[in-house]
Image 1 (cartoon, rainbow, N blue to C red):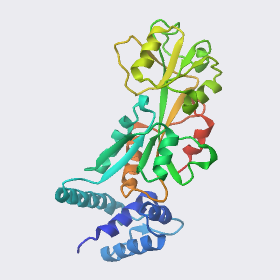
Image 2 (tube, rainbow, N blue to C red; image 1 turned 90 degrees about the vertical axis):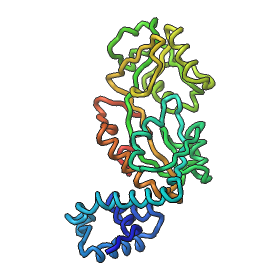
Image 3 (spheres, one colour; image 1 turned 120 degrees about the vertical axis):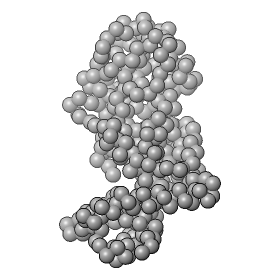
Image 4 (tube, rainbow, N blue to C red; image 1 turned 180 degrees about the vertical axis):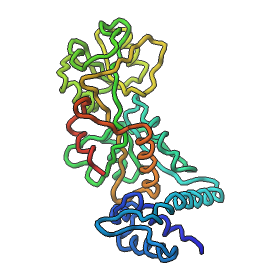
Length: 316
């Protein structure tokens, strides 16, 4: 028998969500059309791929078929790319550039195979949200927070990583020799912000939560400018994602924060009305990378998240 890849794609999307409605949305089709495709595939194979009593779950046959089905779809995409000379295009706008967002994306995109990426430099989340709604980009990646006046209506997000942040200080800071610091230990220091504070939702909420009254912000003049200031000012500090790269020649100290450990929430965002056809595969890539690297660990007794990030823990 010959496999119809459209039917296989319907099965893989449904297996990834275990929900016919969400799978239909992922494929930009109706639930009825998707159900018919899955039924046709089951009829062709002569096996039920899903158990449908009390919800939906993969049958034993479905479990066996899923890895091969994913390989078949990937092979089909590679075959098309071999003829056309180019893989599918995914436009992605990122923000929070000093925190190197693409290092996280890069760990998840391996599941997509031969795909041409077109990264775009978003100014901040509001500007990327606007680009998504206007169809100027396919995906956004960074820290998502609520926008005023419902300007993010029509967009969907998925939390993909919670990254601990360290405090970064220069060699002359009084706490430069500490093995760990609490956020409360920084109240006598000056929080140096890499851009205007009204654009930095995480840093603003961090400073408010831990009563850090002395704050310095200004235009984003790049990572080197920020780090040179930290090196020269014994009162200054900033916070930085623990795995983000920093130059090691300035004598700066990156010190873990504890009691609690603040977490920076990285999310993928997309327009609900025009999902990219590779979105489901990309989300599975984030899921697999997150599981292997423990990206979504959160313990409220140990960690701190801004209140606006809490709903992301149960979304999706």
